[in-house]
Each structure stands twice: as C-alpha cells, then as structure tokens.
Image (cartoon, rainbow, N blue to C red):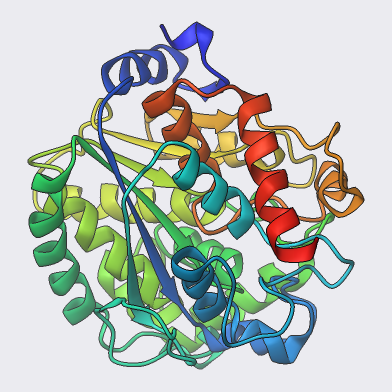
Length: 365
C-alpha cells in the first residue's frame, strides 16, 4: 500500500494515495523533455550549471548522461551547481537503473543538440521572454507533442514526464501569471534562496512586451512568455491521457504545465481528470522554505502533489549532502523518477540513496 513506500503526499492526499495504489507494480515509461530558453542568460536567474556559459549545455548534458552514464558535451561528467553539488540527473540515472525503467528523451528546442538518440519536436531554442516572442512555434510543438503522446502511451501503464530547462522556473512564473494565477514569490529555484524580485521583474516585463493581460489564451501565453518544453509536454500529456495516467515529474515548472493543461482543457469545454494526472517532485522542493509549490497546486485544482522521501543527509559524499542546504532541488524529472522507482520496484529511500552514491562514485571516484 502507499503508506509503505517512500512517497510523501503534499497536496490532494487522498487522490494521491489512490493513484499510488493504482500504479504500484505497474510499468512506467520515463520521458525527459529538454529545451533551452535564452531567458537563462539574464544574470542572477539560474544556477543550473557550473558557469553561465555551461548553462547553455545543461539540457544536452543531462540527455547524454541518461544514455551514456556521463555527459559528452561538458567536462566533469554531469552539470553541477556553481557551489559544487552535482546536478539532479544523478538521481534520475540511479532511479531508472534501480527499477529498470525504460526512457526516451525529447528535444523540444535546445541551443546545443545532445549527442544522443533523441526525438526532435522543436524548431529551435526558446527566446528571451522579455522580447514577448519566446516560442513563436508553440502551436506546432504542441501538436507534435500530442502525436508523440499518442504513440508512446501504448508502451507502458503510465508515463512519467520530466524536463531539463535552465531558467525554466522564470518562464514557469511568467506562464502562471499569464494564465491568471497568483504565483509571485511561489516558484522554486535552482538556488537556495530564489531571486524572487528578479524573476517577478523579468516576468512582468515579458507580459508587457507580449501584450498579455491575464488570463491569456494558453498557447498564446507560451508563445509570448513561455519556453518550448511547456508546449511539448502539454501536447504529450494530452495525447497520452486518453490511454494512460501521466505523472508530471518536477516542481514549479510542472505546476505551470499543469496550469497550461487545465487552461487548454477548459478552452475545449472539457475538464482535466485529477484522478489521471499528478505532479511528483523531490522532498527539497516540497519543503523548500523559499517557495510554495503546494500553494500553486491548490490554485490549479485538486490534483495530487507527490514527493520522493529521498534524503541525502546521511550520504557518504559531502557534495550530495549539500542538497540538504537546498543548493539543488529538482530537475531531469528526479522526483518523479524516484517515485516511479519506488512504485515499480518497491525500493526504499535508502535503496535509492545507495544507488545515487554508486552513480556518483562511477563519475567522481
């Protein structure tokens, strides 16, 4: 039963427990959607990469690490926080291996193409949202995502969809605001204390440049102030949902995608089924004192928010223990992959910690 697994129920608890009970032992398929947004080039917004220059490579590096066990396009094996901790792709790699979960990577619009076998949906990287023209091809990406979701759904009992988009919590904020949600000061960050004032200023400037007055048309909002991942994941989910449940693997960015999905369903005179869609993240996002993802979920609807109970407090390696300082919180679908591993293989938080340590030792000795 759900109570025996290392899964935290952070919002819509009853629905979350029911979904976990239904999915326990079932076959997941993990899909990671990678993309770039030029918004990440605004100084002070992101720490999803050891240096500002390397952040452009982070989505490609994450994709390569999933396939090859280490990145090919950057030194050091995997993307890292500027203060030292390795990026969350280690958790995803460990979870997928531990539970033998198959995966695909979707390139929704990277500036650096991954040296890996990916499915290409996009037509180029996302622009800086302050131009008001972030993803002009959002509708085409969305429609391709729908087709892909229909094709992938028969391969598993449910999909787990993650992302790698440095700067993506700022585009998430802008999208949430465009859709009419009270999101200022609530999105998480790749930094311990999120730069909320800067994010809000960037998002407001983007809305003004795009001429958006909330609540906006959903895909128009992505086109103006979003990023390519948002359009791709929304399409993928809507394409798959008629066949299988979907777990959105992430924090603030997936809350924004969920809000986008609700808006798209409403636009069609439909309702998104909260028994079929959930968000799953890490404990670091769920307990982050500098954000309020549960509060965002409460505005969006009665959709479950799950979190992996994984802790690095007792990790053998000091860089991993720094996750407990909220220096790294989420990414590459880490929380959702960890939850899926627990559901598929019954692995404990300790099992997953040891698996992450093995990946760390393969990379760094």
